[in-house]
Length: 106
Image (cartoon, rainbow, N blue to C red):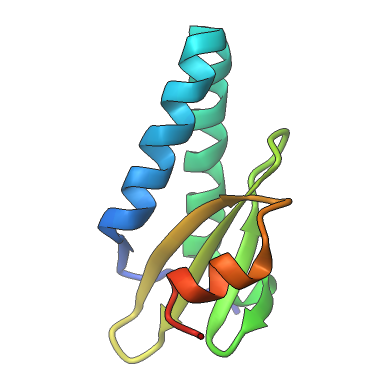
């Protein structure tokens, strides 16, 4: 059964992550920045439809891959409110301790 979540919430930190990454890609190529943004949108649509198909990496925090780019979307699912909260967008090679600290698990 696929359950559509009513709301996707991006934290200010996640929005800042996306903006920073977009600016870095835009400095190289507007086309690459556009493709990155499109893939972020696709990842968000996917986790909105089926958030539980993604691996839980910390207590209540899941990770979705951004296709064709070396980044992950970290998010939590609130089943009661039917909401998905996007907590961070980090490079795949970023130290896991920094990710845990960012989302208050240290």
